[in-house]
Length: 210
Image (cartoon, rainbow, N blue to C red; front, side, top):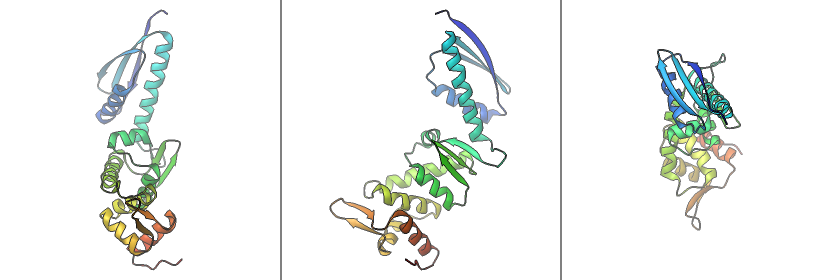
């Protein structure tokens, strides 16, 4: 097929947006050849290839620019929108969505999760830092805990700035978790919701009523 080229201009507000956009652009594996020339708040992108390759490349370039803007600038409600895969890659952590959501809720942030996206009131830099902390805490207990109990331990440990081992001890003392000798792991003996409620009431100095 005949080769062609097209130049598109991407407008950015500041260096922060330019850096994030360029970082995402470098991760793209595009069929077309692209060359970027930046000046002030404009990035001129020269796209070369077949017409189909150029069309696909431009579509994906615009998609990542929209993603970058959604995570850097709040919408009218004051919320940011993140792609969870982007967040986990940036933080270098393998934290599950339920753990992220519960941690944000415990910190008093507004949060919604749907189809691989997270919409929340927390800024990108703060959320990356929070996810890194969750990843570090996960690494401390990943070998001796089950997935379900981690969904209780991690949000509380990070939100309340407590050691995860301390949370485990409290859950055992409350009768919400126990050590399984045959599995060499701690696991819940209550469901997640009950265990979390018992734990939070204990930390707040209240008695749990079954």
